[in-house]
Length: 411
Image: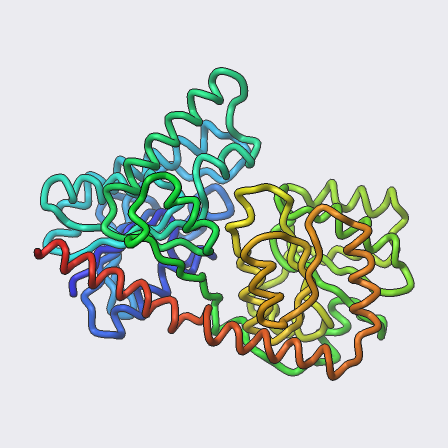
């Protein structure tokens, strides 16, 4: 099969799913052509050593990659983000008819949904079917980001995005979503349930895997010989890290809470920990991805959190897959699909979101749990990942969607 892959994000950026999907599909014998832009995430500027130009082609692991210019932005400005998304929509649409000539099916990574523009043109001109891989629901995630305008302008934007997403969904031959509740929400927008499939994201399995705990890693996270809970990843506005800090401050004799990463909420989180006098809370900042598996192994638990927002119940945060793949038990403060996965798989302890008192109780329960029981949770989590979330399972499902889309296109 000849497959075209369209994504604004592509390696060497940290959004690895499109790149690993392209490489694995090529390894399975498909001809894969990628249309993307130049790496800028999360810097908001083109990576050092790269220069934006129109005619940039490369071949990596059997995948032909065409990069087109786009305005890079990853700051808090909604206007600049919009310009970034629309600029890639424009340049990719110009390049698609030639670079993706003759493909049997298209894979489009969303967000942003503007990446679908090139696929829409090829559908119109040549009837090429597309599979949309939905990572975030729009307009909900835009509204929750705080970057969207309010008042009349906000309502107009919300209505425009809702209408645009409905049209995109209905024009796709197949839709992959990352959680069951997200599938339900897409179907509620009038999409044929038969075209929607839940495909859990996988993690970067070369980085996140079971490894032995080392003294160096324990020293790096400041392990003091007692139960350590780690939150690794984006300290953003949707994770509710303030809830974790309040829970840790209430249980100073039970656990240490270690944050690895940064984000828009990092400064506010540090201030809250200082204000509460939470001496058992530490911030390590961003660490190299190559170190993360060892850091995971040095902590007794990984903490996964989401705010109590209806649309987040259909979100499975990537840090969950990373923890499960490493065989580390999970403490989860969330509702919805992610929480149900952990509970059903026996992979950790779960409590409602935005409830620091209940999370504090879970911290105490985690600290008191016998070692063998905790290790068994980690083993069950690893099995859950292999059975339902691994790259092999995910690529199998997307490959099947693409095969069916191509068959429909030929029919």
